[in-house]
Amino acid sequence: MDRSLRSARVANFVYFALCGSLIGTWVVHIPAIEERVGISHATLGSLLVLLGLGAFTGMRVAGRLADRLGAHVVLPIGGVLAGATLVLPGLSPDVWTLAGALLVFGFCNGCLDVSMNAHAVHVEKAYNRPIMSAFHAMFSVGGVIAALVGVGTASAGMSPPMGMATVGVVGIVIALVSARALLRTAPQPATTATATTAADGADGADGADGERVRAGKRRKPPGRIWILASLAAMVMLAEGAANDWSALHLKDVLGAPASTAAFAYGTYAAAMTTGRLLADRVSGRFGPMAVLRYGAITAAVGITIVSVTPWIWAAFAGWALFGLGLSGCVPQLYSATWRLDPSAAGVNISRVAGLGYLGMLSGPAVIGWLTHLVPLNHAFLLLTLLCAITATAAGVLRTGSGGAREVARSSHRPPVRHAP
Image (cartoon, rainbow, N blue to C red; front, side, top):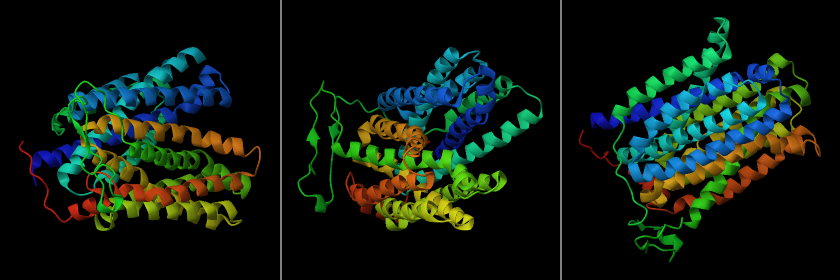
């Protein structure tokens, strides 16, 4: 295999870990920043919406730039900007500056998020086999690194701004050093490309020959992009709900001690990371549609167990199944987005990732609102419903340039060689 291609894959792993570390560093410093600025949990929740809006905007901007300039150009810039703005929330003296800092950091992190996924789909295409889930596993690893570094800097007596600035500077260096290994991706002008919405034979006359886009006109995204984006929003809403409510479920509903309840999220996160490390092999063997469908079914079974069980050990098993089932879903949606229209991968991934990110941020709030009407464990049944809808709609991955069967077959073909 071409050494430059392997290097590009390693560099992409690094950028995913970097993104997870930067977000994780902000998360571990939230309590200290909240106390210093003097805001309530409710105010913090409102500020997190600004973080999401900033990220959504950054994703849209970076997606278009990735298509026009190449993901290898935009990705290191996004990494540098995200590292440089990480310290801003730690330096904010009041609620208004914190709001602006989160908006800016969210924008820059959104640029990093979309550009690293846009580059990842090009690397996956060059490998001719599924590797997207492993990239997302590195994002989870980055979060673990951030937690460990946060504990270390706090033990060393470093203030939150100093700790965040240190991580940010290291992140900038990593982003610049890793840039040399990135896979060069050709710019794809949206005004001269041919949008193909090729479908498998079962899809009939859904535009198998594609439709020509007139020069000077902006491409209209295929309807399936919005289906993929909606599925991403459902899956990531479920992920966001698990992040914030898993430990509280064991503590408040099942009466577990705080030390025991904390392991609920750990069980979920460990299962998700493990699943992402395994999902590429499963996708290569059975196809991405199987990963999405049966992953969503597994997640639905897991969260249903959580919703109805009175036993702590069963709740741990349920959270593990939930994390394992969700683990491979989002990577399959990103890969399908690229296959649907490679020439507009950046823009389309920004749509899918942006809507998914908003779903993740809204997940905790949606469950919180439902707890005003029903007990917390019964509110989780909404997640069962979303997983069931995702499993039912998994057939959308049959469509696109090659579809699920093409990806399944691609694992048996040798990788494409790229010149250094």
